[in-house]
Image (cartoon, rainbow, N blue to C red; front, side):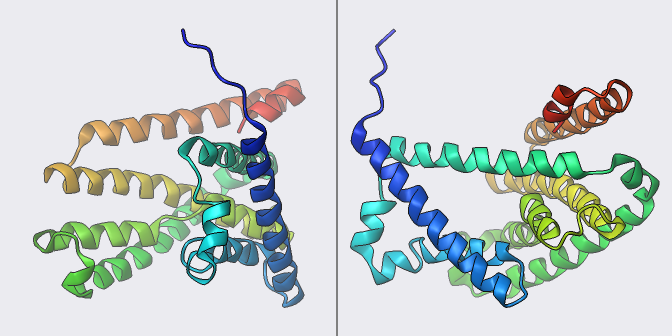
Length: 245
């Protein structure tokens, strides 16, 4: 096996600068939105837009190229840090989730989920259907394009929902738990819809293999979550708590 070269000083310097810039802009915009009585996560998300090719890449292309137009290996260094942050947020969300309350209010959560996915799906489909043909890669696949837009509009972002609820100190309230449960159901249904639309786009038929590959990890994660929650309740094991989500 070929030897793996160690991480160079330049690559490490670039990823540190990227993190500093991202954290500084995200924190600054988050504080501004907090001062305006809005969730800080809105400003943090806006930071990603401002530092991306849509704004920074147009206003200061040289700065954007120096910071973010890097090699694939360099990009993955920043991606690993981003994934670690996302996983830690999901761990905190999992620790704050009351499964007993969610199961007791499962009917209400299901109704909220159906409403939360039906309305965006219908409006997204209508938007995809009336958009000009210049936005459609293949005009003869208008139906698939409309379904894709509808699916993209109806998928929720659990990390963003959890961050908003945490900032509003509502995650442990009944309404926060219901919102989180409805978002989880929406996320599951959305990924199944996305796999279906992807199969239609590639082959013109529903890809059952892709559907199965997306459904198995989702069902396994749900099963493990309930199982470890049971172990924690009966054994009071902090290690199990950390590994449950």
